[in-house]
Image (cartoon, rainbow over all chains, first blue to last red; front, side):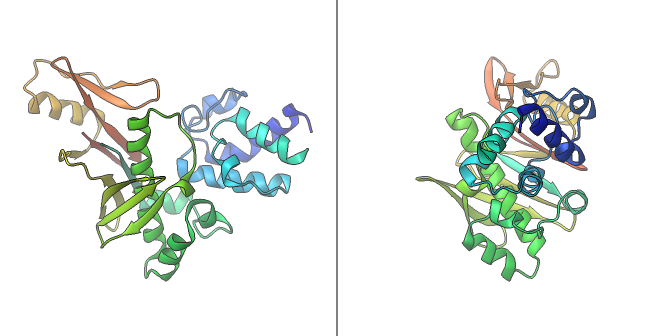
Length: 82
Length: 173
Protein backbone atom coordinates (compact mmCIF):
# COMPACT_ATOMS: atom_id res chain seq x y z
CA UNK A 1 0.00 0.00 0.00
CA UNK A 2 1.33 3.47 -0.83
CA UNK A 3 2.21 5.97 1.86
CA UNK A 4 -0.58 8.24 0.52
CA UNK A 5 -3.19 5.48 0.81
CA UNK A 6 -2.12 4.66 4.38
CA UNK A 7 -2.16 8.36 5.29
CA UNK A 8 -5.70 8.73 3.92
CA UNK A 9 -6.96 5.82 6.04
CA UNK A 10 -5.05 7.11 9.06
CA UNK A 11 -6.74 10.49 8.66
CA UNK A 12 -10.16 8.82 8.98
CA UNK A 13 -8.95 6.89 12.05
CA UNK A 14 -7.68 9.92 13.98
CA UNK A 15 -10.64 12.19 13.16
CA UNK A 16 -12.85 11.31 16.18
CA UNK A 17 -9.99 12.10 18.61
CA UNK A 18 -8.87 15.42 17.09
CA UNK A 19 -9.36 18.66 19.04
CA UNK A 20 -7.73 21.06 16.57
CA UNK A 21 -9.94 20.83 13.49
CA UNK A 22 -8.13 23.36 11.32
CA UNK A 23 -4.83 21.48 11.68
CA UNK A 24 -6.75 18.27 10.95
CA UNK A 25 -8.02 19.69 7.64
CA UNK A 26 -4.41 20.49 6.73
CA UNK A 27 -3.07 17.14 7.94
CA UNK A 28 0.32 16.23 6.45
CA UNK A 29 3.14 13.77 7.15
CA UNK A 30 4.60 16.40 9.48
CA UNK A 31 1.50 16.64 11.70
CA UNK A 32 2.11 15.77 15.35
CA UNK A 33 -0.81 14.03 17.09
CA UNK A 34 -0.50 15.93 20.37
CA UNK A 35 1.10 19.28 19.45
CA UNK A 36 -0.80 19.87 16.17
CA UNK A 37 -4.00 17.80 16.27
CA UNK A 38 -4.34 18.17 20.07
CA UNK A 39 -5.25 14.53 20.53
CA UNK A 40 -5.50 13.67 24.21
CA UNK A 41 -2.63 11.34 25.17
CA UNK A 42 -5.05 8.73 26.55
CA UNK A 43 -6.66 8.64 23.08
CA UNK A 44 -3.30 7.84 21.45
CA UNK A 45 -3.95 4.29 22.64
CA UNK A 46 -7.28 4.33 20.78
CA UNK A 47 -5.49 5.47 17.63
CA UNK A 48 -3.04 2.56 17.99
CA UNK A 49 -5.87 0.07 18.58
CA UNK A 50 -7.91 1.45 15.65
CA UNK A 51 -4.83 1.18 13.41
CA UNK A 52 -4.42 -2.45 14.51
CA UNK A 53 -8.05 -3.19 13.63
CA UNK A 54 -8.12 -1.23 10.36
CA UNK A 55 -4.94 -2.79 8.93
CA UNK A 56 -5.29 -6.14 10.72
CA UNK A 57 -1.85 -5.86 12.33
CA UNK A 58 -0.46 -5.98 15.90
CA UNK A 59 1.79 -3.20 17.12
CA UNK A 60 4.44 -3.92 19.76
CA UNK A 61 5.44 -1.44 22.42
CA UNK A 62 8.68 -0.35 20.71
CA UNK A 63 6.65 0.64 17.62
CA UNK A 64 3.83 2.24 19.61
CA UNK A 65 6.45 4.47 21.26
CA UNK A 66 7.16 6.15 17.91
CA UNK A 67 3.51 6.69 16.94
CA UNK A 68 3.20 10.33 18.01
CA UNK A 69 3.00 11.82 14.52
CA UNK A 70 1.64 10.95 11.06
CA UNK A 71 5.01 10.21 9.45
CA UNK A 72 6.21 7.71 12.07
CA UNK A 73 2.79 6.05 12.20
CA UNK A 74 2.65 5.60 8.41
CA UNK A 75 6.16 4.08 8.57
CA UNK A 76 5.17 1.63 11.32
CA UNK A 77 2.10 0.54 9.32
CA UNK A 78 4.11 0.19 6.11
CA UNK A 79 6.73 -1.95 7.87
CA UNK A 80 4.02 -4.21 9.33
CA UNK A 81 2.30 -4.66 5.96
CA UNK A 82 5.47 -5.45 4.04
CA UNK B 1 11.61 17.78 39.81
CA UNK B 2 8.13 18.76 38.64
CA UNK B 3 5.48 16.92 36.66
CA UNK B 4 1.71 16.76 37.03
CA UNK B 5 -1.35 15.37 35.29
CA UNK B 6 -5.10 15.70 35.73
CA UNK B 7 -8.04 13.72 34.39
CA UNK B 8 -11.51 15.26 34.34
CA UNK B 9 -13.59 12.15 35.04
CA UNK B 10 -16.72 13.37 33.23
CA UNK B 11 -14.68 14.19 30.12
CA UNK B 12 -12.78 10.90 30.38
CA UNK B 13 -16.10 9.02 30.42
CA UNK B 14 -17.00 10.71 27.10
CA UNK B 15 -13.58 10.26 25.50
CA UNK B 16 -12.29 6.89 26.61
CA UNK B 17 -13.46 3.35 27.20
CA UNK B 18 -10.66 1.90 29.29
CA UNK B 19 -12.23 -1.55 29.09
CA UNK B 20 -12.01 -1.61 25.33
CA UNK B 21 -10.23 -4.88 24.34
CA UNK B 22 -6.42 -4.61 24.54
CA UNK B 23 -6.59 -1.01 25.90
CA UNK B 24 -5.29 -1.73 29.40
CA UNK B 25 -2.56 -4.01 28.05
CA UNK B 26 -1.12 -1.14 25.99
CA UNK B 27 -0.70 1.03 29.07
CA UNK B 28 -0.47 -1.14 32.17
CA UNK B 29 1.94 -3.81 33.28
CA UNK B 30 0.46 -7.11 34.54
CA UNK B 31 0.77 -6.04 38.17
CA UNK B 32 -1.09 -2.80 37.39
CA UNK B 33 -3.85 -4.62 35.50
CA UNK B 34 -4.35 -6.80 38.59
CA UNK B 35 -4.60 -3.68 40.76
CA UNK B 36 -7.18 -2.14 38.39
CA UNK B 37 -9.27 -5.30 38.05
CA UNK B 38 -9.34 -6.06 41.76
CA UNK B 39 -10.27 -2.47 42.66
CA UNK B 40 -13.77 -1.53 43.77
CA UNK B 41 -13.44 1.45 41.45
CA UNK B 42 -11.51 0.09 38.45
CA UNK B 43 -11.98 3.13 36.18
CA UNK B 44 -10.77 5.57 38.84
CA UNK B 45 -7.89 3.26 39.76
CA UNK B 46 -6.88 3.09 36.11
CA UNK B 47 -6.86 6.91 35.85
CA UNK B 48 -4.83 7.15 39.02
CA UNK B 49 -2.16 4.88 37.49
CA UNK B 50 -2.37 6.82 34.22
CA UNK B 51 -1.87 10.22 35.89
CA UNK B 52 1.01 8.83 37.98
CA UNK B 53 2.75 7.61 34.81
CA UNK B 54 2.10 10.87 32.96
CA UNK B 55 3.37 13.09 35.78
CA UNK B 56 6.53 10.99 36.23
CA UNK B 57 7.07 10.95 32.46
CA UNK B 58 6.80 14.74 32.34
CA UNK B 59 9.31 15.12 35.19
CA UNK B 60 11.85 12.80 33.57
CA UNK B 61 11.28 14.32 30.15
CA UNK B 62 12.17 17.75 31.52
CA UNK B 63 15.14 16.42 33.45
CA UNK B 64 16.62 14.28 30.70
CA UNK B 65 15.62 16.69 27.87
CA UNK B 66 14.36 13.73 25.89
CA UNK B 67 12.08 14.03 22.91
CA UNK B 68 8.45 13.08 23.50
CA UNK B 69 7.73 9.36 23.14
CA UNK B 70 4.63 7.39 23.92
CA UNK B 71 5.75 4.52 26.12
CA UNK B 72 3.46 4.09 29.14
CA UNK B 73 4.65 0.48 29.58
CA UNK B 74 8.15 1.78 30.36
CA UNK B 75 6.78 3.07 33.67
CA UNK B 76 5.72 0.84 36.54
CA UNK B 77 3.48 2.10 39.35
CA UNK B 78 3.19 0.95 42.92
CA UNK B 79 0.40 2.30 45.12
CA UNK B 80 1.49 2.85 48.73
CA UNK B 81 -1.87 4.06 50.06
CA UNK B 82 -4.84 6.03 48.75
CA UNK B 83 -2.61 9.06 47.98
CA UNK B 84 1.04 8.12 47.75
CA UNK B 85 2.70 6.00 45.13
CA UNK B 86 5.99 5.30 43.39
CA UNK B 87 6.74 5.24 39.65
CA UNK B 88 9.74 3.21 38.45
CA UNK B 89 11.48 3.85 35.12
CA UNK B 90 14.67 1.98 34.21
CA UNK B 91 16.89 2.40 37.30
CA UNK B 92 15.13 5.53 38.62
CA UNK B 93 12.08 6.11 40.74
CA UNK B 94 9.85 9.05 41.63
CA UNK B 95 7.31 9.40 44.42
CA UNK B 96 3.89 10.76 43.56
CA UNK B 97 0.88 12.14 45.39
CA UNK B 98 -2.64 11.73 44.04
CA UNK B 99 -5.71 13.80 44.92
CA UNK B 100 -9.00 12.21 44.02
CA UNK B 101 -12.52 13.64 44.12
CA UNK B 102 -15.78 12.56 42.48
CA UNK B 103 -14.92 14.91 39.58
CA UNK B 104 -11.19 14.59 38.95
CA UNK B 105 -8.01 12.66 39.65
CA UNK B 106 -4.82 14.68 39.97
CA UNK B 107 -1.28 13.34 40.43
CA UNK B 108 2.01 15.15 40.83
CA UNK B 109 5.56 14.10 41.56
CA UNK B 110 6.77 14.88 45.07
CA UNK B 111 9.97 16.88 45.16
CA UNK B 112 12.28 17.42 48.14
CA UNK B 113 12.07 21.13 47.32
CA UNK B 114 8.40 21.15 48.23
CA UNK B 115 6.65 22.32 45.11
CA UNK B 116 3.43 24.31 45.06
CA UNK B 117 0.39 23.72 42.93
CA UNK B 118 -2.40 26.00 41.72
CA UNK B 119 -5.74 25.17 40.10
CA UNK B 120 -6.88 27.85 37.62
CA UNK B 121 -6.47 29.64 34.31
CA UNK B 122 -3.20 30.99 32.88
CA UNK B 123 -4.25 34.55 33.79
CA UNK B 124 -5.09 33.60 37.40
CA UNK B 125 -1.79 31.74 37.76
CA UNK B 126 0.29 34.60 36.39
CA UNK B 127 -1.53 37.11 38.63
CA UNK B 128 -0.72 34.88 41.61
CA UNK B 129 2.96 34.71 40.61
CA UNK B 130 3.05 38.52 40.32
CA UNK B 131 1.74 38.75 43.89
CA UNK B 132 3.91 35.95 45.34
CA UNK B 133 7.11 37.41 43.91
CA UNK B 134 5.99 41.07 44.28
CA UNK B 135 6.66 41.80 40.62
CA UNK B 136 5.85 45.09 38.90
CA UNK B 137 4.14 43.39 35.98
CA UNK B 138 2.52 40.09 35.12
CA UNK B 139 5.20 37.66 33.86
CA UNK B 140 4.94 35.85 30.55
CA UNK B 141 4.47 32.07 30.40
CA UNK B 142 7.17 30.78 28.02
CA UNK B 143 7.74 27.32 26.54
CA UNK B 144 10.96 25.44 25.80
CA UNK B 145 11.42 23.92 22.35
CA UNK B 146 10.02 20.69 23.84
CA UNK B 147 6.88 22.61 24.83
CA UNK B 148 7.63 22.66 28.57
CA UNK B 149 6.42 25.84 30.31
CA UNK B 150 8.71 28.13 32.31
CA UNK B 151 8.81 31.65 33.74
CA UNK B 152 11.65 34.10 34.15
CA UNK B 153 11.34 35.74 37.57
CA UNK B 154 13.92 38.43 38.45
CA UNK B 155 16.32 36.94 35.89
CA UNK B 156 15.93 33.48 37.39
CA UNK B 157 14.35 30.43 35.77
CA UNK B 158 11.16 29.07 37.37
CA UNK B 159 10.09 25.77 35.87
CA UNK B 160 6.36 25.15 35.61
CA UNK B 161 4.43 21.98 34.84
CA UNK B 162 0.93 22.52 33.46
CA UNK B 163 -1.83 19.98 32.92
CA UNK B 164 -5.22 20.61 31.39
CA UNK B 165 -8.17 18.29 30.82
CA UNK B 166 -11.85 19.18 30.47
CA UNK B 167 -12.85 21.75 33.10
CA UNK B 168 -9.56 21.57 35.00
CA UNK B 169 -6.13 23.10 34.71
CA UNK B 170 -3.36 22.79 37.29
CA UNK B 171 0.10 24.30 37.57
CA UNK B 172 2.93 22.80 39.61
CA UNK B 173 5.93 25.06 40.24
